[in-house]
Length: 437
Image 1: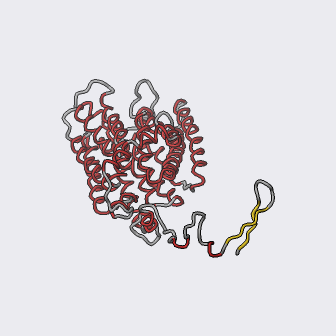
Image 2: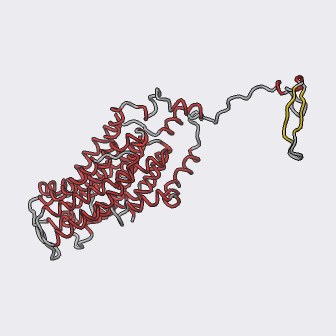
Image 3: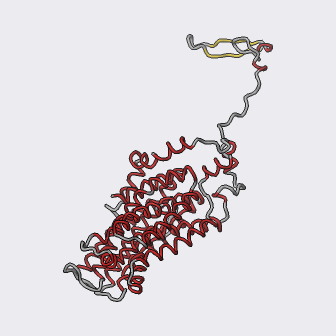
């Protein structure tokens, strides 16, 4: 007989319990506990496959790819983003030629190809972000950029300003895949500690592209005297990038790869309607109901820092153009040299992207960038108003552009860190808000 003493909760004393050894294997209901088989290791569906997928020896996982393969993907995605951004502003250099070719009398109508393209960039992300979480990143990159190339052929041969504007909306929507998915693709391939450098290189596209677009356009128009060649150059470059992407670009979205290869325990059998229903509304949910996504999106909107780049692009022809316009002071740079004034902001962008930040310091660098932006803007505006040396406004442009890029890289990387597999939807919400406002 085995004896055990337990406290009596009523009297405060002890109750002596005696258990027969022959009954120790039985529970209170008289059942033989020893006859019950031991519990099995029960895992959630797909949990075992997910552990195998995340193993460091699995080279099918993009996080385990060799560095050369990762950086080749980054280069191709950055090239698409850069061309899309260049295309947004390169047409601005041919505004006078567009006005003469289509016999336009309004001073605002020639700017429609630029504004309609930006409108397309605001629409596209709401489709590409969710769709990439359904059919993978690579399929979206290839399909959208192929159509982007074809639409630019249509833009280059447009017979009227109406046709050109409509095609530019569609081209902007298709060209927005790179700016939308690039940050998410980098999050697919790099761990948090390694994303800073990759995001900095990628950030050259959406920030440096709009700056060098007018620079390239000014020299092309000066030599060809035709706005159509601006778009033919985009067609040639985007066609080459599309061909290279078709050969070398690899799929990076891990959930899509796991579904396709059966690593998630579903053998690739997932209803498309279920995926679509959840994915298509996700950017709106994040934008309106996630405080982090909402705050970051509206901070990067044109009403705040990102709009400073486009405001700067508008003021350069006024400040450095060959002739004074609207009774404003001009440094009167002639013969295509006006485009060189964009290099002030371009230099700042290069400096901003070269500043590498670790995961724990991203919010610090974001705050530093926020402080630099207004200082640069004040220097640019004050020296231009006082008609100081031409280099001083460009110095101000370089300062505020470096601050903008520092903030941009921090926000892109932070959203990729926070939202993980759904970072494409978060970045799509941010880009849509940034372009629409």
